[in-house]
Amino acid sequence: MKEKLKIGLVGLGGRGLGLLEIVILKMKDIEVVAVCDLYEDRCERAAEAIEKSGGRRPMVTRDYKELLHADEVEAIVICTSWSDHIDLAIAAMENGKYVACEVGGAFSMRECWKLVEAYERTGIPCMMLENCCYGRDELMLLNMVKMGYLGEIVHCSGGYQHDLRYEIAYGEENRHYRLNQYKHRNCDNYPTHQLGPIARILDINRGNRMVSLVSVASKSAGLQDYIRNEKKDDKLADFKFMQGDIVTTIIKCARGETITLTLDTTLPRYYSRGFVVRGTKGMFMEDNQSLFIDDLHRPYETKWEKQWGNKESFTEKFDHPIWKSYLAEGVKEGHSGMDWLVLKDFFDSARKRTQTPIDVYDMAAWMSITTLSEDSVAMGGQPVAIPDFTNGKWIGR
Image 1 (cartoon, rainbow, N blue to C red):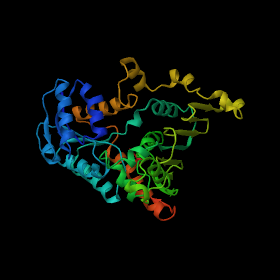
Image 2 (tube, rainbow, N blue to C red):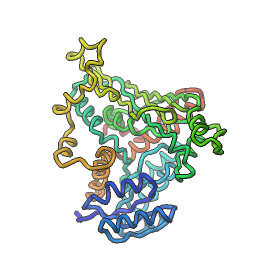
Image 3 (spheres, rainbow, N blue to C red):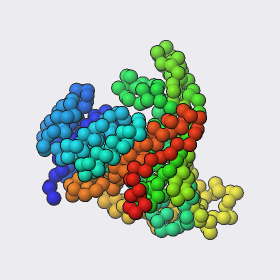
Image 4 (cartoon, rainbow, N blue to C red):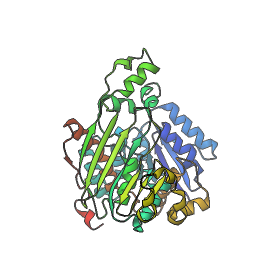
């Protein structure tokens, strides 16, 4: 095994530079040898950060193909706008590079299938960097579920519930891609932050699969109200955004479980992923950090506020082994430590030339929810089938 894994980073906006400066440059076994972005100033900032950290100046290019063709580059990390994720991932696999891709939703079913076909043709793994799969709460609940503590799981819910009005409204000034998505699409455009952890809990693609969904969207009012109040004479003040303020998606699974996902990003609110797990022996709720265990908590059914925050009393027993080790080593920066864990798993796989823990079938299935929800919303909430990207292999995986 090589001492250092040599990687290339494509996409150097807020997320790409953040991962580089906060996480990757602090990993002693990683060397960033190439960086790429359409904007020259972003490339230069990344190159300077690498040099200041003690590394040699990387290849700097605005053409991702130059990076992919560089023999020195062993693995690629993609942090570009959503619309480029799958094309770049396919190109990386076709050039023999292990590839990690930031989260986002798909634009068509065809591109999801192309992603899977590229992996099956090349044999090069592709991993979605869904950091929430490595969240402490999410992994603790996974541990509890696998130990049977919540009984048989019946329903899970969650979503992306994050006030992004400023980020979207100032998209042109900040060269941020989200603005165009909200102008022209109406869907769950960011489904994976809670779907990823839920998929692990429900064994999606590994003995279970998602089979259909329905999605409905509220009207769009939040962004226009915000822009009229904050930017006043801005040209977007009278723009009719397509994206509904709240999109609700209900997914049915092959084993009978249901999943509810909520996109809620253009109204005033507190941040939450709204993680809920419901089983025959109990439940977990993120928003009040509590577990309700049937045998323990039945007397508190109508006075549950007395038990809010009781999750901490379960952590010592049920903390996932990954987090027990992580706490002992020292939790790193980056979304409460999740960024370090997800990148470490990817880099370890690339170094050992093994399969990634989140694979291309997961990536295709999770990303497909965006384009499928778009279809369902457009048809007034009609059911839409979710393809089986494993072609039947989910039964025995």
